[in-house]
Image (tube, rainbow, N blue to C red; front, top):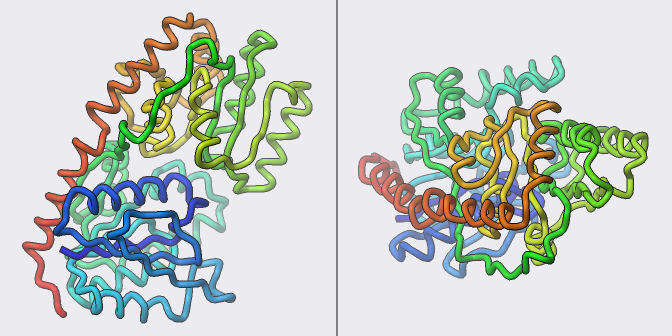
Length: 382
């Protein structure tokens, strides 16, 4: 079975989506020798994959960069489908040229096609847009994206919340729910309890959907002891928003306790997580959030929101809140009062929950079954 994965950006800069897609692809390649995966991505950079995985990169055209367009895009997809004898296409994302071109190719060849929106159609994401941007997206969604769909298109959702959203916006299309996952064995926990820092960590894109502004306000309002710090680590996607956040910190006089590190990767990122008291992901909209899993496998509990769809998170030692200042402030105070013993216990419970319910060992068979069933019932034209 030959699967073509299509994404607008498979570089490390695409953060969460690249992490999810990269792990799924490697797990398929490692566990199923009869499955061959080809990645087609826009741009000139990619993360490292298993040696069995083929990668096709399509550089952007200068004038089409805003939409991720290239004059060679459709041609390259066509050539890849024919050369690699593709059986099924799995598209990640919605709004860029790569997804649109892949949908049209799937329709042309009558190939089964899975679309994973990764939370891009959630209600908050629509409502956050300025009116002009919202109108543009509505036109694109209804006049360009939907007509590119076929009867062979199914939608993959990550949580029941996302399923409800897509049932409302895309009625009549088949959906399947498969959660995100992580490999618990990929991390070696090696931090001693006495080395835990009295710090909270936000790790992710610095974007309004992540509610970093609420987190800063809550940390200030919590009025914790002077030994407590808030580390904000991640790429600064929206300059004006980042400037507002940094101005807020300066106005509070807490610039020595609320620290922006910029994007972090690799070993430095994992060390930063391991020494953290608790991870904080107060997103307005999120489909689980891979960073919650990454923290859990390092035995670091997290405070996250009901909106992530992680309904069982508190069973694993984490805390669930709604994204508002009062609930976030209260959660920070509760976490700061944990004893070392309770903090360690919550970290271990987080690990156990993820290992049991959100590991690739339990999730990857669901993907293999889905791909196989779609290919067996397809009527592809080749």
